Length: 133
Image 1 (cartoon, helix red, strand yellow):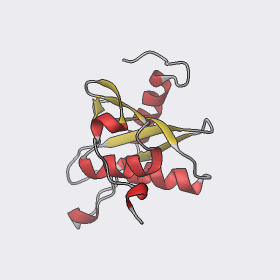
Image 2 (cartoon, one colour; image 1 turned 90 degrees about the horizontal axis):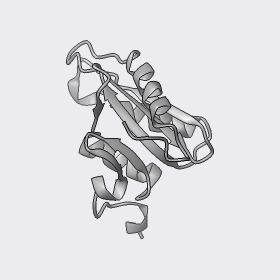
Image 3 (cartoon, rainbow, N blue to C red; image 1 turned 135 degrees about the horizontal axis):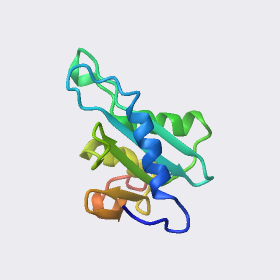
């Protein structure tokens, strides 16, 4: 587990992701996911995955987290972690990495399966708002 880096308590952030995971709706895959992130104003936002009988329209935990970010005032994500049903840290999928990049930028710190990394490390050469004219 990463230590507190002076700006975030990673253990508390993981606890928030674990709590969110308990609310996941995953009757088809049984793969529950919870996510938590710190916002630049100090808030913590969370999300859980929500499956659907039409599998392709399932919502990832990161989708719920980003929705909560905007519902509660916006801002930028600064630190992020997600966990599975066994409370293990997992990596966001490629689609969700793009979603996190949009809302946290290259500097967003993620607790990954191989330690804390910046978004720039887990999604190098990302496409974002600056690429649109």
